Image (tube, rainbow, N blue to C red; front, top):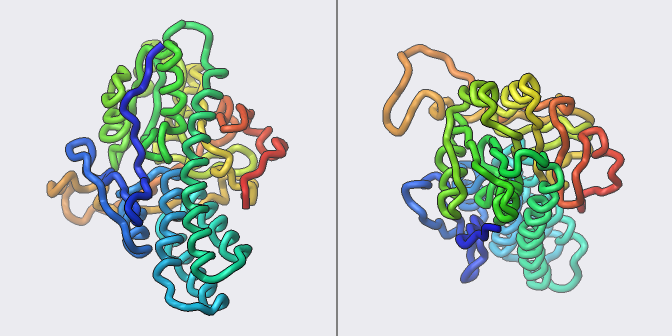
Length: 353
């Protein structure tokens, strides 16, 4: 067996503020950003200092507390009205990641149901944010271990391809898709990780490889366009990716390029799995057609650093996510077990409202 020694926690409550690993500076700089105000948390989420659906949810929960802390009133109705504005600010940051909305809703529900003084409510909100943080970490451990059940029996040591970053940096720690990788590594079932670079933000190149190197997990970086070639050569045993939102029928939104990867996997009979907490399942959406797709600044595709890659007058289209149809997904690995996409709606396991 192998053991992980370098734990990564991207969102930490410390000294009455939130410490975020600045993921925009990785892998060259491992630095933290201290967040004291709700507006700063909103900016951190929007600019991807913190990213990954579960980590965004945790950060938003703390952002709700920070916003509550800034409200100066002893009137309950005034406090709740002001907190609704805090919630709206945070909701506007990343439209696709459902964990963001789930965490905010849970915090608002806590506020409305809490008794006592305004200060009592604020302290309850802090406790709820810390609980969300701790629960997500335990969820990731469970997802990783449940993923062991779907690993092919042969070969003994597997090569797993993943896309974007669904590791510790994208969650409260350990990861979803990379949590499955970590559990496989721990149990001696992993030969190597192949990481897509993940254009245009390069989360695979910058973040997934960084996490693997920290823990001594063998990792090979490829460009997104190399996946088909690698599968044709027999280099990939299975694919595991994360998710930002899953519809009730199992259609899954994840980082742009995931859909094409699923098509390639299907063509080469390589099993394709999604690893995500049940809080990522949006049971209010019947299919992936209803999932909003965030479009980001075109600078992400026409610039690298300060270098402009394209001629003038070029037009740009920069969707941050795509939707993989349920029929391309072998199973969805959750903290409560592994489900075929069509079984999600009947699992009778619903996230806390």
